[in-house]
Image 1 (cartoon, one colour):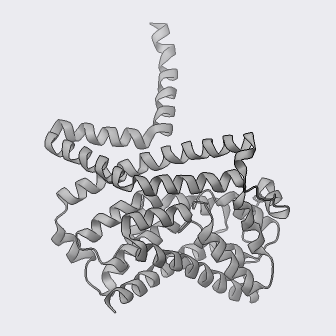
Image 2 (cartoon, rainbow, N blue to C red; image 1 turned 180 degrees about the vertical axis):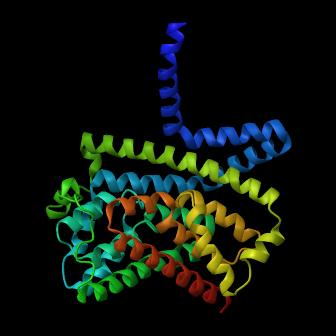
Image 3 (cartoon, helix red, strand yellow; image 1 turned 90 degrees about the horizontal axis):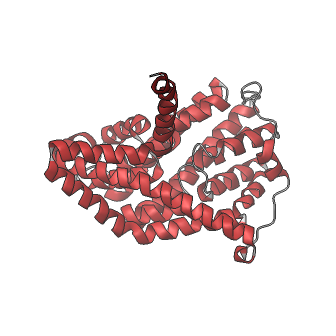
Length: 349
C-alpha cells in the first residue's frame, strides 16, 4: 500500500510532463476520441479531412522546413544584427524588414529583444523588429501561399513590414519627447548570449553540409520543425473540419462577412484570444474565408493574433514595463485593423 502511495506523486509528475510535452498531440487524439464516441461518422470525416489537407500542403511544408533548418545551420539569422546600425529612420526601416524576414516567433524573439534593449539599441528600431518578426518569415510565406494564395502572402508580408515601420516611427516620436527612456523591467537584460550575437555576429557558412556539426544542426532543426508543424497543423485541420461541419456559413457571413468596418474590427479583437499560432491559424482562416469571411477580416485576425496572442503577450509583459507593453498592444491592434481595412479595399477595388 505504501508503495502505491509513494508512486502516485511520480505518476502525477509523469502525467504532467506528458501533457506539457505532448499536449497538442493529446488534444488531437482526445478530440478524435470524443468524436468517435459520440459521432463516429464525423470522426472518420474529420480524420480524412485532416489527412488530405496535410497531403495537399506537404510540398509547402517540406519547403518551409528546409528553409527554417537551412537558416539555423548556416547561421544566416545572424545577418539580422546588421539591421540595427545607422540613422534612426533607416534603422527603423531595416529593422522592420529584418523582422519580416527573420525566423523568430513572437515568443522566441524575446531573448534577442532583451539583449538589444540592454545594449542600448533605440527602442524605436527594436519595436519595429519586435512587431514585424512574429508576423512573417520565409517558412510562413511559403505556407501562407500554399493555404491562402500568393496575393494574401504578399499582402501579409507588406503588412508586417508596414506595421513595423509604423510602430517604430511612433516610438521614435515619443522617445524624442523624453518618453520610454527605460523600457525593460528592473533586473532584466544584461546582454546574454543574444547580446554577444549582436555585438559580433558570426560569419554565415553557406556550405553548411561540409561541417558535421552544422549538418547535425540542420537535421535537428528539420526534425523539430517537422514535429512542430505536424502537431499544430493536424489539430488545426481537425478544428477546421468541425468548423465547416458545425458552423453555418450564414453565421460566418453575417458576423465576419461583407466589406464594412465591423467585420474587420471584430476579427481584430477576436484574434487576440482565439489565435493558436501562425501555422495553425492559416487553415482555420482559410476555412472561414471559404464560408464567407471577408478577406480583410482574415488578414486582421492573422495579424492581431500573431502579435498579441496570449502566449506572446505574456512574454512581452514579463520583459517590458507596463507602458511599453500597452504601447506594443496598441500598435499591434491598430496596425492589424488598418492592414485588414487596406486589404479589404484592395480586394474590392
